[in-house]
Image 1 (cartoon, rainbow, N blue to C red):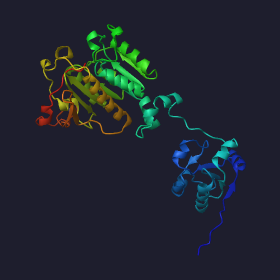
Image 2 (image 1 turned 120 degrees about the vertical axis):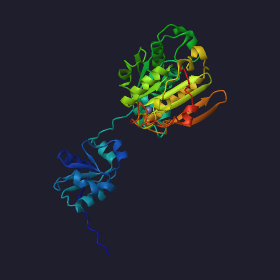
Image 3 (image 1 turned 120 degrees about the horizontal axis):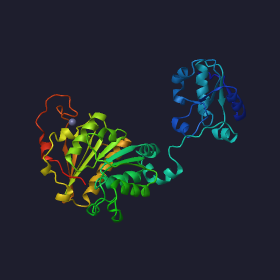
Image 4 (image 1 turned 90 degrees about the horizontal axis):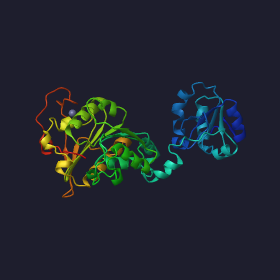
Length: 383
Ligand SMILES: [Zn+2]
């Protein structure tokens, strides 16, 4: 037979609790973190009931500190108060009232800082509903900076969808002007903008789509002299370049600065996508250690490109960017995705880090190129 000890802590209503708080009682909130996040007493210490016994000593070492304990209704906090008594805290007072009554009586209250404004909650509502995104994920996107190398065929769908989705900052590197022959696939631009700088045309389109996204125009050609400055400020780099020189320059700088690069390339009916995450997966040089001769990489103006192909490949790249920014899903790091538009088929080849890679290797000698990498000849242009 057990004899229940009567509680030796006091229980008070809202008015007295307000006075005790004003008098310097330390407020202990024993609710759960999700409840806390919806609002709490200013200056309170959150220790969920289950953790009270293990954490109170480190939070409040002095057993003479007067404690005002509360939860939502006064039940959990009564149990917490009994525990605190047993642990030797001499002045324990339980708020035996509902928190709503506390707030109605004008008790001090701190609203949570909203992650999203009401406008943002409306605009991104369909995306925020996805459990892996939520308001926190949307906040991440809004705080993210993505650099697109090229505002052409691949850059167009990528920029449009990242902007629509609420990526906060989009940088565009392009020194070209809109040409009539671009319009068949470069959907950022339009007929009335022929002759306009692509970065200006892109900015107009993106601003119309989502005024909240900041567009940073880099009207220059990416090269060895400016690459580190260009990519240094961004979280993710998207490669929509049209030549191999640029790809190697971008790769080496991205490895050095540890920036993930989402790679895409297109050629007539064929597209390739992969993601390079420095030191966590292979880099472009691991995949293609030597640069092919220029005649193997004819531009769109020579080889031609199917209008929808950059749309498909670009959106696969945008999807990679999303996963990188949100830290969810599985990226294409170490996998080269091959798309054949003519047959509507996807294939995948494994790509491995090369220990002898001059960019990301550890200096050991390079083994023979893997059969997979050889089979997947580099696709050429991308605009
Ligand atoms: Zn490498």
